[in-house]
Image (cartoon, rainbow, N blue to C red):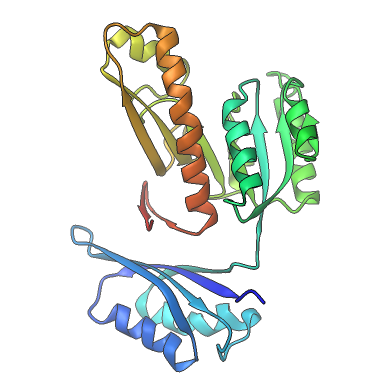
Length: 285
């Protein structure tokens, strides 16, 4: 029988004794801590915590966790979330024509690396339907133009609502989401951008990098906000290049980074290891 685990993500102004107070709170109610990590931002005097505990002998039922933590959260002026590992996230993957990031997510899901359900795949092109069929995942095509963008997004949102989707993965989806769409999933849309942000935001970053003659290219996994390519960063990586590399070489090397960085960022999000603070993140890995 699998044990039920709860994860608390917590941030508040720093004070003495915070780790002890939260640990004591869990101990007094029968919680067995299985993982704990904390960080203090000395410049902003902010405290960040991720703690996971075994719920087997916990005195509070899962449905009462939010109410039980409210007084403690108010006392410290904290922002916090609690999630049970039994509450598996339901994903919608958005993709256009490039298949490498989608392939990586589907492969790792098949290996059991992601504790989530892929509810559906949405694309603005039909070409990658064969991948969804191979993995027995519903595939939906919504061709997008400037004239029909708002209408298509309404249909997509209705479809995801019906499928109880709570997380969106943009696996090289080459469309800009509207502010209304983004607002439906705050801190719940994970994107891969094919550059080392904030460098070369926007379109054609590999060409921008090639024309600038940079010596590294990168990939960035980040949360989507209303401002294009400006959301809090979850994960990044780079690879060196040289004057011998063509634009095609940059693209080839970059694609390897994109799929790995998106996979790592997706795992961090699904395991509740990312705590957003303003434009920055604290990643407990």
